[in-house]
Image (cartoon, rainbow, N blue to C red; front, side, top):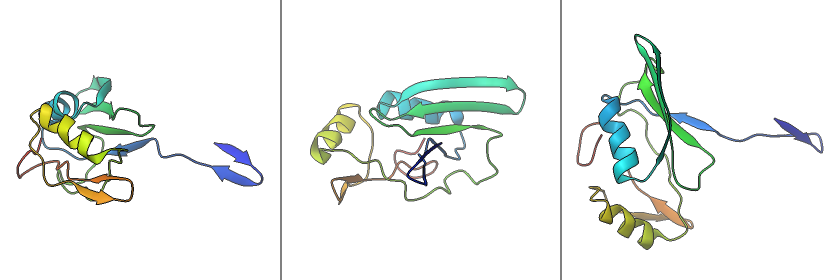
Length: 122
């Protein structure tokens, strides 16, 4: 944390996404959505953390076992912001990722990356 001019400078680094199937979800994020696999670590039975980062992002997502008691699929309304929504859509289509409609949200795209159930869900 950096304190500058009396104000604290903070950054969001990780969002935990509750999923039902860690391996399948990891494959969707890396192989189809182009996220980098930063960590896949299981130090003990009942605990595993997989950290994935979207290209160009300073914030990562974590999926795994024993990270949260939230219900898989319960996380809603995260936005993946891109500079060129049409290019991002083409890139996802090129990876054969089933996707919902892209929606303009300011300068980027809003879409769903569901954690379980429904088309394209990990």
